[in-house]
Image (cartoon, rainbow, N blue to C red; front, side, top):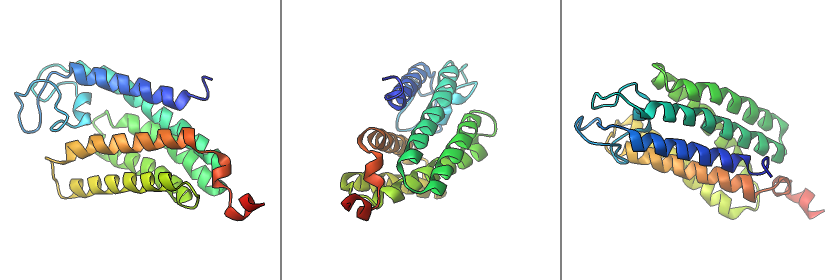
Length: 206
């Protein structure tokens, strides 16, 4: 039972830790340093990791956010390990396993002074794994998950576009939408797909 629901448990624990971090964030945004508390539309999640909040106060949310960044990539890695067992292509499975393990380290390093470069690497690793997973989903008859995969990818690449054009007003919102869509997709794929769904159509016919 514990093994079966480990991905769900990890995500729930991560969300609880993040929500605690948000609840104790002193305040300040990139637009208003005097703002009180955490703004879902104006603060980035990375604001939770600073030793001081953007308003200059000591930041008690840091410890909770750091704990979340330990649990979350471990949970994602577990999901991709499980997905590697479902897909029929071994080489793709190896990529999911090794890239997700590497992502644990780089995601945790995003809370350091290396945030920007580590974020690029960890984001690339995570979405490479999710893109590979989506490619195999598109080869199945799981039409609802095909739709969800496409939506999740569109949200991600739109967020990348916003980052590229430095749209700092919309990007904080899309960051949360991106996290929500990818996390819901992962939960759906973890608990509502099985190895047989990824078998070649001819094999399933027999």
